[in-house]
Image 1 (cartoon, rainbow, N blue to C red):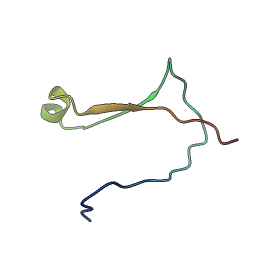
Image 2 (image 1 turned 90 degrees about the vertical axis):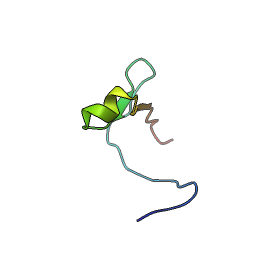
Image 3 (image 1 turned 135 degrees about the vertical axis):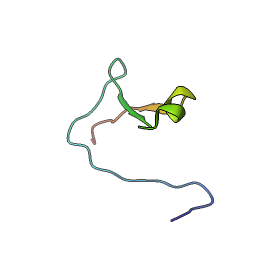
Image 4 (image 1 turned 180 degrees about the horizontal axis):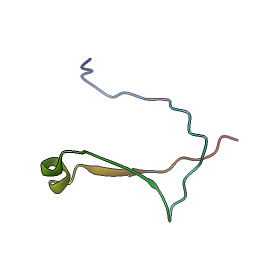
Length: 47
Protein backbone atom coordinates (compact mmCIF):
# COMPACT_ATOMS: atom_id res chain seq x y z
CA UNK A 1 0.00 0.00 0.00
CA UNK A 2 1.34 3.43 -0.90
CA UNK A 3 -0.08 6.51 0.80
CA UNK A 4 0.93 9.82 -0.69
CA UNK A 5 0.61 12.15 2.27
CA UNK A 6 0.58 12.19 6.03
CA UNK A 7 -0.64 9.16 7.99
CA UNK A 8 -1.47 8.60 11.65
CA UNK A 9 -0.85 5.11 12.99
CA UNK A 10 -2.47 4.02 16.25
CA UNK A 11 -0.65 1.18 18.00
CA UNK A 12 -1.08 -0.22 21.51
CA UNK A 13 2.09 -0.51 23.61
CA UNK A 14 1.82 -2.17 27.01
CA UNK A 15 4.95 -0.44 28.28
CA UNK A 16 5.71 3.30 28.12
CA UNK A 17 9.11 4.71 27.25
CA UNK A 18 10.99 7.58 28.86
CA UNK A 19 12.99 10.52 27.46
CA UNK A 20 16.22 8.98 28.79
CA UNK A 21 15.29 5.54 27.36
CA UNK A 22 13.18 5.91 24.16
CA UNK A 23 12.17 3.10 21.85
CA UNK A 24 14.33 2.88 18.73
CA UNK A 25 13.45 1.63 15.28
CA UNK A 26 15.80 1.06 12.38
CA UNK A 27 16.34 -0.74 9.12
CA UNK A 28 17.85 -4.20 9.25
CA UNK A 29 19.61 -3.43 5.97
CA UNK A 30 23.06 -2.25 7.05
CA UNK A 31 23.48 0.07 4.06
CA UNK A 32 20.34 1.98 5.07
CA UNK A 33 21.29 1.98 8.75
CA UNK A 34 24.67 3.48 7.81
CA UNK A 35 22.82 6.28 5.99
CA UNK A 36 20.94 7.18 9.14
CA UNK A 37 17.64 5.35 8.75
CA UNK A 38 17.06 5.08 12.48
CA UNK A 39 14.53 6.82 14.67
CA UNK A 40 13.43 7.16 18.25
CA UNK A 41 9.96 7.49 19.68
CA UNK A 42 8.41 8.15 23.05
CA UNK A 43 5.35 6.20 24.18
CA UNK A 44 3.32 8.13 26.74
CA UNK A 45 0.81 6.37 28.98
CA UNK A 46 -2.83 7.15 28.29
CA UNK A 47 -4.55 9.29 30.94
